[in-house]
Picture 1 (cartoon, rainbow over the protein chains, first blue to last red):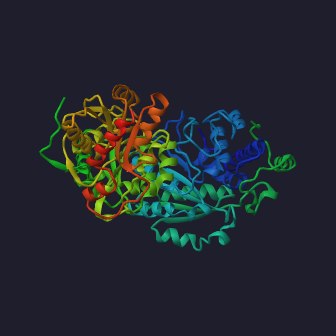
Picture 2 (picture 1 turned 135 degrees about the vertical axis):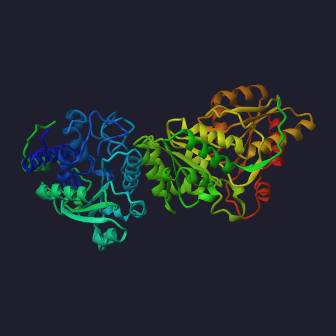
Length: 282
Length: 317
C-alpha cells in the first residue's frame, strides 16, 4: 500500500481534529488542547511512519510499537487508532461513557485494540517503552519503539531515570518525542516548573536530539525519517517537537485553558466550522 | 503427621537466587532486573550464566517497574529484584498503573521484608507491603517460609500468567519443608493436624508456629498449623475447613496487623464462619534497629506470642 502524501495526511488530520472536539464535547470532559496539538504527529506515525500489523497483537513482535505516556491526550490516539483500522470509528461515541472500551485514559483491561499499557499517571511511558525496546532486541526484532511524552510530564523524576537508563544501555531502537507546547495545567511550563534548556538536558543524558515543528506535517515526517536514520547507532533518539496546544481551532490555541476543558455547543460549532469533514464523522 | 525438624538454616533470599538460576536454564523468556542490590538479592549466579538476560537498573526502582512492564510486551517474563520496601511503597503507582491495571506478567521479587532485616532499622523494615500488594486487583501475593519453599515458589510463579509479588527475607532461618515439594499458588499447606486451635502462619512465622505447637502439645493442646504461603488468592476453603473443626484461630505474620494475613483471615471468617481470632502481628508501629530475634520478641511476633495468643483465643470459643 502506498503511503499517504503530505496533503492526504493533512486531510486525515482534519478529520481526527473533528473527532477530538466532538468526543470531548459529547461527554463534557477530556483533554482537547494537547490532543489537537499532537494530531499531526500521531496521524503521521500511524498512517506513514510506523510499520504496524493488524489484527492487533499485544506482544507486537515484528512491528513498530507506540506508547502514549501522556495518556490524557487519549482522544487523539483513539481517533487515530480507529481511523487507521484498529476498531470501528463508531466506538469513538462511547468515549468516557460507562461500559466502554474507550476509557478516559488509555487502558488495556477492556481490551481496546492498539493499547499495550495503561497511562495517565505521568512519567511512566518512557520506562515501559525502554523495556519493550530491550525485549525487541532480545527477540532479534529490528522494529522500532516510539513513545510520546508531554513537556509538563518532564517534571516527573521517573522520566530522567529512564533517560539515564536508555543511554547507559544503548537502547538505540527507541524514538522518543516530547510535545513541547509550553503549557501545563497550572499555566506555562516556564512559570509552573521551568524546563530551562531541554535540548541540553537530553544531550547531557546521552541522547541524540532532533527538533521539529509538530504542527507542520512536512516537518513531522522529516523529523521521524531523520530519527529513524539516527537510530541503530548506539544512542537513543529524542525528537523535541514544538506544537501549539489546541492547534487547528483558533480560539483554543496558545493557552493552557483548553488543557482539560470541553467546548460547549456554540464553541463546538465554531471549532467544526474550522475543520473540514474529510472522512465522514463517526 | 510429619514431625518438623531441621539440620540446616539458610536465608529465603538464597532460595530466590537459586530458583532464578534454575529458571534461567529452563525458560529462555525469563529475564531479571535489579536496582543495585545484586548481592543482597543473590542474583549473581543468574547474571554469570545469562548476562544478556540481566538488566542493571541502578538505584531507580520506579524505572525498573516500568521497564519490566515493557519487557512483557514481546513475551519476556521479568523478575525484578530489590528490597521489599523499594519493591512496593516506593513504586506503588508504577506497579498499580503499568503492571497491575495493565495486567502485565511481571514478578516483583522482594527481599529483606519485615523486622528480620534487623540492624538497618525501620527505614528499611517494611511491614505494610503485603497490605499494599494484596489490595491491587490482578495481583498475586506470596510469602514463602523457608529456603526450599522460596525456591519452589520462584520457579512456580514463572509458569503463572499475571503479576506476582513474591516476598522473602534476609536472615538465615530453618529449612524444614521438603526440597522436592511442588509449589502450588493459592493452595494452603496443612503442616500439623490438630483439633483445639488453628494457627495460620506465613513467611518466617511458619517456623515459629511449629515451635509454638510443640510447646502447646506438651500442655495437651492440640494445634493445627497451616502454612498460608499465598495470601492472595487466599485458600478460603482450607481456612474454613480448619476453623469449622477447631472453632478458633491465630494468625501469625511479620507484618502490620492492618492489612496483613490476619486481616484476610478475619475477613474470611466474618463473611463465612464467624469464630474467635487472635492476630500475631506488629500492632501499628514502625520497627527499630536490633537483631532479628530481639525485634521479633519486642514486637510480639515470635513463638512465645503465638502460644499466648492460642491460649487466649481458646478461652474465647
